[in-house]
Image (tube, rainbow, N blue to C red; front, side, top):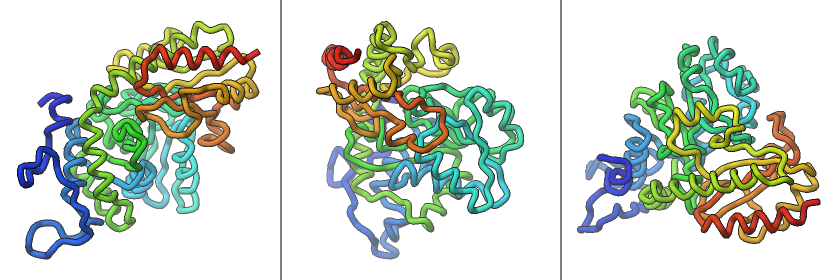
Length: 361
């Protein structure tokens, strides 16, 4: 079954002739009437979303969480112990950085390095954590090099690429993680996360999820299953709008630098082109006037909203140093602007950006 068809039909539960899986809003189940007991452990609506995403990521099994950070924290704490070493790159989502820094209090060593040095630094790691496309500088780390050099587990946050554009498990990763709040959810109306991999690993993560209580609620799973059905058509527009905006900004005289993998100026363009089908809607850029120009630009937008998160149908813009990277040593310039291109008409988005740039001196 191909991606588009599987995203709609795979794993659906037939009930009373309904063409979609109903939402099982029940916390507990009657014992000995089926295989379900308690929804913190397992739930039929949740399992449909898990099966579907596992297939799309070309993995054996999946486990869903109450948030992307729930997926990251529960997965990592299921795989490492006191005395272990985690190696990761510095350009990383701020919430992930804060969580990894916290692990030192539990005797787990975390080593941060630059994206280009990751494959050289991972040889003695018990676990390597990386993003397939980094947030917010939009780099594409050398996953294949990391897999070749590392004897430990390789965990990839594939949120920014989405399973439509890239499948890290096919290139040697052990586990793929998503903040399903983003492209998988796609409508800015749920908070969710998921991890995918071989059942022998995912079973350990699932057991910890049960103990940590980071399970999703059934209605979020219902909405996630709804959203995944349109992932392919949404990603085509996200990919196109991201590229169009990046190319427009790259030619503008008030823009200093644009970060997006399709551009010839991007340091990882050839790797991204070889590995990925597309690069999603997230891009970042710097203006000639620095932080003050960035603030003026953000405040002048009309269609694109000043808000955190990404991957929704609406376009969003933010200054990472103010929120998601504030106070962190991630190498993010103070004046960097991050745009998540939605699925609006690209001409409207370009007009909005062009009008906002007119106010920059």
